[in-house]
Image 1 (cartoon, helix red, strand yellow):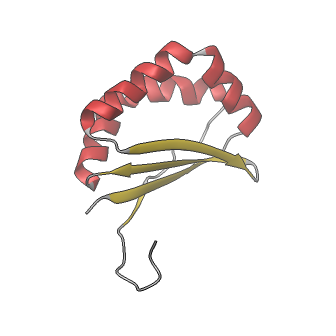
Image 2 (tube, one colour):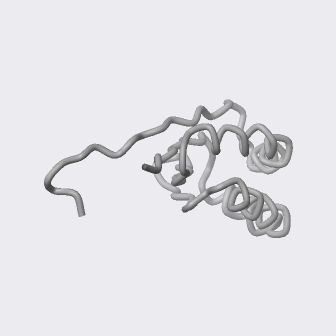
Length: 101
C-alpha cells in the first residue's frame, strides 16, 4: 500500500510560486525524475506562511532515494525562494477504517 509524504517548507508561498514559474524547466525535470522513481502524486499547497509538499509514493524508500538524488536541484530552487530551514519529510500510512472513501 502506498504512503503519503508531507513536508512543510517555511517560505513565502507567493515567492515560492514565482520561483517555480521562473524555473519551469528545472521544476519539470525534477517532477519527471520523481515519476521515474515511482511518485504517484505530487502537489504544492500554499498558506499560513508556508508551503506544503504533498506526495504519494509506493513506499518511503522510493521517496528517500529520489530526494537524495534530486537534492542539489531541489536545494537550488529552495535557496532562490528564500528557504533557510531544512524541511523534514514525514510519512503517513493508510489506516483501515470503515469511513474510507
